[in-house]
Image 1 (cartoon, rainbow, N blue to C red):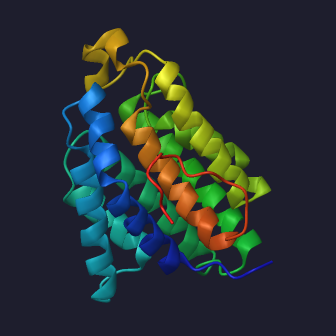
Image 2 (image 1 turned 90 degrees about the vertical axis):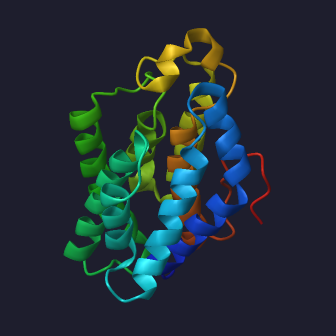
Length: 212
């Protein structure tokens, strides 16, 4: 197994979000109020800065920023996911081995999914970030590439769904045709993790914007 670097995941996720910002914004304009790209990019910028200051580890910084500073519907929900990931990684000593890291992520992402569903009450099929997160959690025991593929497929499938939660539910059938931006944002996280763990793996990016 290779070496897994949590800092590299944070930086890859932040870079991918910078690159895909316009696409994430357009997706949210299609079904919401258009601020998801700004919120995700801004939160990741602040989390990188917090990490670089030495105040927190990579995922602790993400959790703190998204819970306390990022607005919108998805900000605090993502904060729950990042916090649970940080706690699972802390319990396993940061999990530098790919296999150990995937197990820690499975534990943390599973706890994050439970917390998000407890707070937001969304289920698979509601066209939310849960549609990407739930299949990723299920696939993580098979490794990060499997989780990235599952999250990407789950996010893509939201384009076929009628929203039953959040602002997208107000536009009804008009939200169909493009994926949910929150689900794409979660899929980008797992894409970044897979890109670090298995740089030569087969896991297409969940956005059409080339990420490099």
